[in-house]
Length: 211
Image (tube, rainbow, N blue to C red; front, top):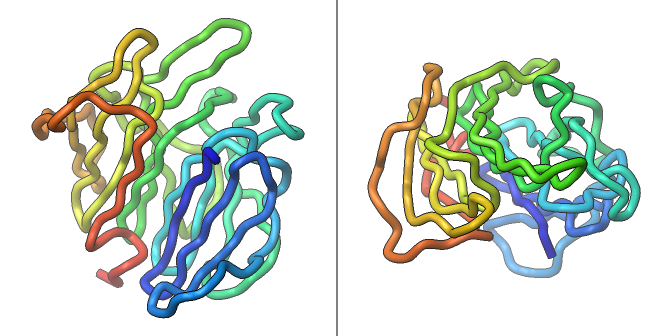
């Protein structure tokens, strides 16, 4: 449980779920997953995941089996196999669980998440990276409220964040940003019901086009 996925237009990767292994599939075929390699350590809760056509980046990698969270980001080259490499850190040294990822072909976004120690905090921050480089995230803007367990999906230009939990209730709000700019989210519309613990997919995302 508590896994995350990312992919190119040919391969899909699955990570986390209290294990440090990365599995992959060839999307055009059917069959069981194959071992890709390992994360640096056990992903003890849902890591944020995003990808372009070349790289997949995973944010928030676990420290030991259920032993806390780190602010580390790691990456892999999707067309190959092997263990992950260090990408950088989430901004401010913040340790976040259950953050969500989305991307264009050049830029990746991580949004939301929470921490449970020493006090519970639900984050409204959106951070961004340039996928082809490495380094720490930069501030992008804010969600309308701190949220955990929402879903973040993207097309060529926009990323939409939907649902989530703010510590007392689930959310039915969908909100979007323009990936190439920076700034706070804008209202997109509403889900049919309030939801959390969601997943997102789209017909066009950072891994599925070259433009």
